Image (cartoon, rainbow, N blue to C red):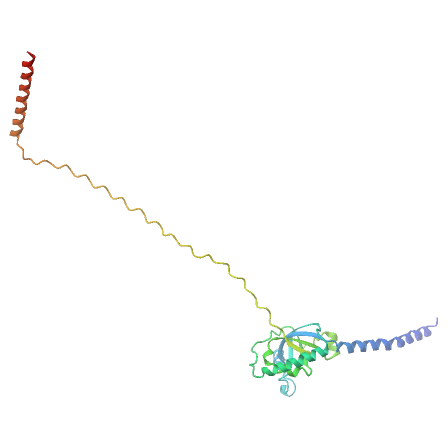
Length: 247
């Protein structure tokens, strides 16, 4: 086959297929910026974000950025509601925030260490008035504003501002359940301590026996001799008496 004919057929095929492919790309681009997704993160002001990341103060020295917000430490997940439901939620929260006008601003701060998104859209104004939400986690139902951001997941180039997300609704993230500390182990009541037995009393030494008392030396030897003599006479008398009876 002639080479020129082959080239012509190939070119015709490409031009025939190009319009559908281009249309599909445009359709995909359009769907990227209409898909509602859930963006959950910590809320901070854009001036604070710019200062923390050395991104300058913005045009005219940052005039008009005081109510602009950035969602930092953000996570992206599938959307939870339709656009109509999201707008209804935003309206209810708008009414609720009127009661917060006199509430003191939050003193909490975001870690600002993860992915970030700038917030925009009509729902940003009521959200910016809820000063008590600054430094706290917020759940945003929204969509990427630009298709390029949608395709890259919102990751900005170095030194650039984060991608913009159009808010459809917002809601404070419920506080995490308090951590329950384990109950302390039951303590046994103090056992009464038995006092140590006193040592046995030292044995009292037996009193020393009293020495025998000496008889008073009142008797004399004369009385002793007299007693011996009397006994001798008595014994002689008894012997004589036995002899007479025997004879």
